[in-house]
Length: 422
Image 1 (cartoon, rainbow, N blue to C red):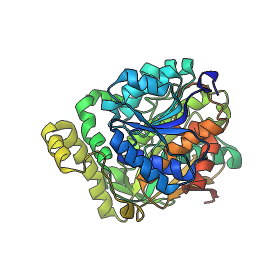
Image 2: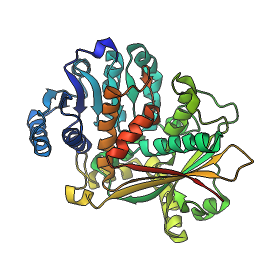
Image 3: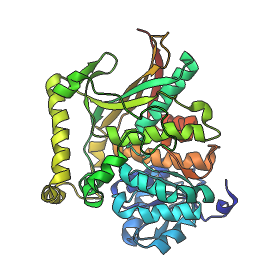
Image 4: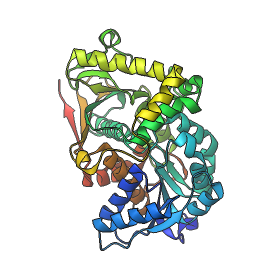
């Protein structure tokens, strides 16, 4: 750990702890992380933060309660002072394209490890351009998009490629990920992010950020393409995969692809990760499993038309912002116990002499937002307690490697990987 972080007041600070995801993150830290970790919660309202402190004490009475730090995401000097007090900062204040840059900058300059749960890949691209070099100089390990978007896809892809390399002795040519099961409702923060993205970035900026391998630091030798859609999918909105079932379009496909493809480009540049490189021909695609061809048709074309309407009709966005769940709100505790999330995936080796494939299943029985809180808290524990062999810079969830996956598995997000024979 860099000497400049040794004598800081806190190990972890949760910024935005009074929000929906922030509260869940504080709960997981209170319930599960070692009691010798020094931590604080931060936000604008002392009264609301005190309520979170009292809530945390119900989960683990033996743990010292978190300290309270007052900070506004619009006040850069206050954020810089906060970043200098802690080794790790977890940012849960979104939409990040509106409220996230000053926090990101403060951590990059202060040498403070940083994690967030944005799904705004276009914003992440801007942060990489502006602050990656600064983070490398300060020693800050910075990992955006380490929530449900886009950690599950990134980690399952990494596991598949590791299995192909270790068990099938090959690079990976193709990975297909499916959101196999998703039961749950979006939070107000998620809806605000989706509805606000087009207010901040132009269509050309969004298109560029979502183009193949746009966030990869390593250029493609071949033309940077992704898997092409099967003809049946293009026409009817779904197709059948013998390993994953009937697949339709996924709202998170481009968002997750940006991070997975950045991992592809980062691995050969990291001295401790070069052996984990996926291969020169690697391509990736994500879908959502549906029950039948009719559901697939409505999911696919519903996403197409919703994207067109949100992009081109600002009055519709304004109306929806007033009607949907507001930021800070989300499913209650009872509803969250009935939710679940499962990913499945298949990897094809870059070896024409084998018909074998790698298969992965990753499942969490509970809320996707609780899982996001687990990602944040366990990522903090990973960089604090494990030797992740990373210098400063902007990384991806998979760059934390097997120790992070082991922590997630112990926390309830279970992974299974096996070889499939045709």
